[in-house]
Structure formats: structure tokens, C-alpha cells
Amino acid sequence: MRVVTQFNANLRADSSLDAEVLAVIPFGTELKGEARTETPNWIRVTYEGKPGWISSDLLNFVSGNTAALPVVTSD
Image (cartoon, rainbow, N blue to C red):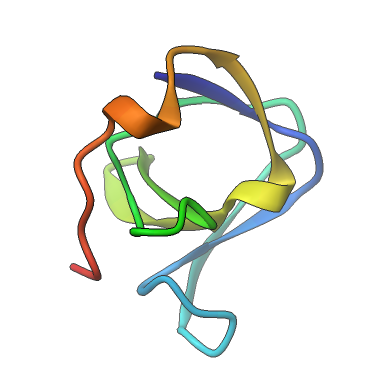
């Protein structure tokens, strides 16, 4: 699954707005979705070698289907 950031987006250590910010991913960055939360509100990606979570509200879905991603709760 391919996604693109719609805004500068925080890459978080866990699937929560309270989780540590690992990096800020610039607007327009294309990423590969690797996993999702049970309710697909968060997508796990790897950015510059760092795995983390991005809110799905900050992403444009380019190809693929979130339902096809494995469901995980956190790293």
C-alpha cells in the first residue's frame, strides 16, 4: 500500500497522539504502509530507517487497501 503525506506529519513511536514524536515527515512524502491499527486510524510506516505510526487523517491513499494490511496494536 502506498500513501503520501498531505501535511508535515509526525511519525510517532506508538499509535497515539500522546506518543513520542520520532520525526516530522515533510508534506508530499510517499511512504509504504506496513500495518494498521484495528480501526484503521493509524498506519505504520518506515521513514529514514525509523518505523513508526502516522494518523491516517494526514495521509492520501495512493494505491492498495488498508484492509489488506496486517493489524497490530503497537511496536
